Image (tube, rainbow, N blue to C red):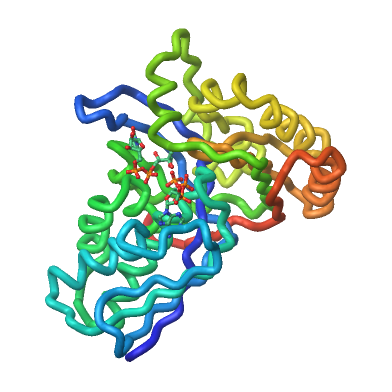
Length: 293
Ligand SMILES: C[C@](O)(CO)[C@H](O)COP(=O)(O)OP(=O)(O)OC[C@H]1O[C@@H](n2ccc(N)nc2=O)[C@H](O)[C@@H]1O
Ligand SMILES: Nc1ncnc2c1ncn2[C@@H]1O[C@H](COP(=O)(O)OP(=O)(O)OP(=O)(O)O)[C@@H](O)[C@H]1O
């Protein structure tokens, strides 16, 4: 096999709670993660040109060793002494620096793809062990679906698939550094913690309304007071009929959960009318049906 094409799916956090801070600056988290059908296309191909080459449609992304897709390929090429030239094409659609794990999902796709293209025989566990060296969200992006993530995000428990629904994704014209958002969180007082167990109960019973009612992200307490546009997007989503609306990850992307596509479209029109978002999409959850849960 000389060429392989993969879909690198983005994620939303249905829940994000922070339990504590480690000495190395990383935080212990408790998160409910969900992949959505908004994805980057990742193409891996063997090339005559030596080394790892990155080609991307976004001129502001690094096309060198700083790209996380490059780092993923290098990690496996070094370990398995792969000497071929490799070209990685990233057709980006997931908003960048947005809390949707765009980079992490690209890295996960490269690990999966190299494993297949070179017959490395790595198990999902083996891929995750390598993935966490690249970023805390990478093991989850390897696993995908509806998952409880603990530790720094790498201790993963698969959950029943989230009930079918429509997701409206809206990213305003600002970007957030994950590291800085976590640092600002450390300086907050009087933190209100979300009800992660409520989300888990909703997912277990296949109840969309209960799942949505439990949604909460502790990092909103950093971002919402700083950027009023986020609260305005949330209000527009709720007005359009969202069961709930929230920021994903470290932001600034907001998402809403809807029972009907028409409601998601109504909310999208409200957000567009007020010019609140730079990127906006209606999508679905990506359901991974796992046996024996
Ligand atoms: C915000 C989330 O996207 C929620 O899913 C993740 O927690 C972030 O995952 P990520 O972007 O893959 O994170 P990394 O690339 O490993 O780390 C970026 C920065 O985020 C902070 N970070 C990340 C994960 C974590 N559990 N605690 C942290 O404090 C650290 O300051 C780190 O330097
Ligand atoms: N393949 C890539 N795709 C997107 N960003 C990349 C990539 N490689 C490196 N980066 C850099 O990483 C930074 C974070 O991008 P990314 O889109 O992964 O953030 P994110 O959605 O906040 O991720 P997370 O939810 O995991 O925190 C960007 O500033 C970007 O320059």
